[in-house]
Image (cartoon, rainbow, N blue to C red; front, side, top):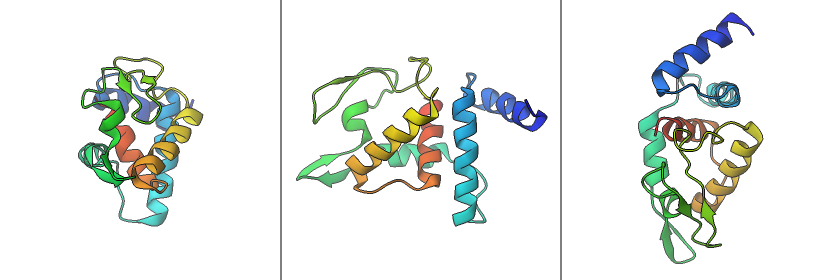
Length: 137
């Protein structure tokens, strides 16, 4: 493992309060590169902005929804999909160790959930902000 990657993992684990998965660290690095291409002034992901995105309410099919509609305000608790009525395991990696541990799953669910709530794919910066918020809660 490169020293820079190891350093990033150590710094990230201090700021997150837990040790993030290598998949999360690598995916956030990819998103950071994408975000910098779009906005050269971009420096880092913002937990507060991620929270705003997560709690933002949008009208979809005549109903007001947000990420919280299915995942609840407490990410350590089980949620319920409002369309399928299926239970959703806690989103917080502090309550569910498998969360944010597989980049393919993160990409799949971010794409699907941004589309469900925002009717579009999220930007790299938005995805990174949301992942940062989730990982710290």
